[in-house]
Length: 329
Image (cartoon, rainbow, N blue to C red; front, side, top):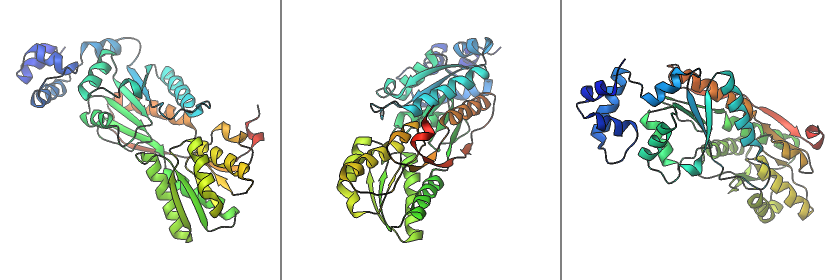
């Protein structure tokens, strides 16, 4: 069996230096890190903490990383489905899974994040809700030190896979369906976050539809916030024929604002959360099966841990019309 002593000899450094690199200690030069990581790869060395996990009845320990920054006072159904889907499939695949929250890593450097994950014997991660501005997570993926699956962030390399639906096509489809069912050439589009991968793709879908149909398109960022969507609807909806929202929570905010304004405008959302059925009116939306997405992410992570290479996976979605009767138990 390859030991840490063999890695040190291969890299031409002290054993203590190898230990520092493997545990993410700061103040180690990039050149030294490169030598050690190359030696680890060439010798197929498995650190003791990882070996312990792999030698048990379980095939590895993985973490699901959740971004809870957008949680409202409403029940966060999407995160609950992610958790249920992840844990359920992990148990079936004999994987030990823990939950980590984005706020726990926000202030850490890459070395500190690596050290923390290794201290927890983590071999792989599933990252939910990653944005373009999550620089440390981008560096973690680029470093290829762990097997990683990102949900809703199209980042792929040898050690990382990405999984999501075709966001552009789905946004285009639900907006076009709403447009066909209602007369109008002027749309208020409440987009998500400026720095989000999902938001950017959904905006592309709206821009494509506007160009094809010759629509007047006013885009405002609602930040996936019910409150902000309500405010933007009060401000802009009177002069528009249709309100298209990049999330159901924003669609609920927009619909409630229209009801308070005592005017009718067709509204459509995106996600298919149960809460949308209580908005007071029927609305078109894109239904994603978040538990299934999470389950597929676990399956993909297991494949990576078993030696597979990273890839992008695009799952299906469904256009639905949510109404109160649909959510009755």
